[in-house]
Image (cartoon, rainbow, N blue to C red; front, side):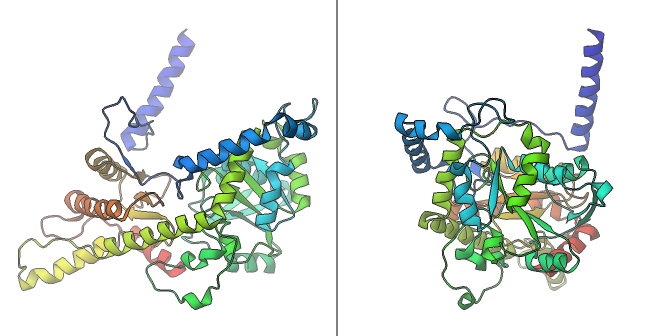
Amino acid sequence: MSYTTNLEKRLQFELDNRERIGTLRKLRDHPTSTSTLPPTIDFSSNDYLGLARDPHQATLVNRRYQTLTSTSVLQRMISCWVPPGNTFPIGKFHPSHPIGTHNYTRMRQRESALLCNSAYDANLKVLYSLPNRRNKGVVLMDELCHNSLIMGTRLGRLDRFCCGSVVAPLQQILETAQKFGAVVIVDEAHGLGVFGRTNARDLWSVDNSTDDTKFLPESGGGTGVLAALHLEHHPALLCSVHTFGKAAGCHGAVICGSRTLVNYLLNFAKPLVYSTALPLHSLVCIGCAYDTITGSSGDEKRARVFRLVRLFRRLFQNSSVPPQHTPPPPGEIQQHNAASNRLRSLLLPSPSPIQSVLIPGNQACITIATQLRNNYGFDVYPIRSPTVPKGLERIRIILHSHNTPQEVTSLVSMLHQHIVTLLVTNDDHSVRFIPEAARNHQHMAKSRL
């Protein structure tokens, strides 16, 4: 009994320490039909196209699942089930089952594909099983990459070097890798469903007008950044990882690459060998999501998303710090203009539905996010250190096809108001809290776009 008690004390100590420095995570209560919580407006989920909440999408999934599980169809599928004694459990479909991989290889224009339970799982499988340090394995990655990539390199005992990026310059990365005999793994977690050949123009900064004549109408919308840039067949591309837990609105992930790579993973990726494979219903959800994402409905949803992205950025960049006096005296005008410019500079460059506003300091970041949620119902998310470097904490705002222009306009107004009230101005009405590291980070980010 004392052992358990002592252990729990140690666990509570670690939790208390996290709360003290502002990094404690908590499960939040969400409004229900019986709760007193006010309804919230989604500006935090990765459900970019709203498929996870779309009743039409749910109907499509249910109908297809009922068809596939009818007696006649099910009997024809029995031979594809994993038999007893294999590494994959009885009653689940093999990760290379044609129902699960046919669409992915065709749409990704790759030789083979391997289904996984999640993108975290997929990244672990790839990086864990690659040649390790004994074979002089080295990984270069974005300094803000997902934790699954970091953990995969640690498990694989790979040397890791980091480099920052806002929008990955894939063309240059692939060409550089080819020059030095290296290979590239592209994580398309936020590319699937959001970018593709039908909206390649949206990959560039939405702050500037783009010459649409450079982009001819194409099919294959929503299949990712590699597809948008026609890089699926680049010789330096080892594989790409696509998650279904974001724009696809369901669960799972797929690794797309060569047959050699997929066969290698089937033999050496222990997280795959000893995992439960996805059930049929998950495969049906994924297949239906692909149909929607790559069809005209997907193009319409993406168009709505990027109209809101442009609206959000335009409104924020047109915001200003209110003067202390009306009208301001001549000596205050220059100071007021400088403060307004610094306020607008808090918005980080991004052409994607993920927008970030710098709010340095964990507690300040949490305070603004909490006020926006509790007072106005805007569900935004604070990104705190050490997830991002200290001094570069930010509010993450995600725009979706189910958001409205009115919601976006109100969000920008309230966000601006709380930044000004809580963080931006002091007695002499000058912006006081943006550290030099943050300004340098912004300059580097803009130079990459």
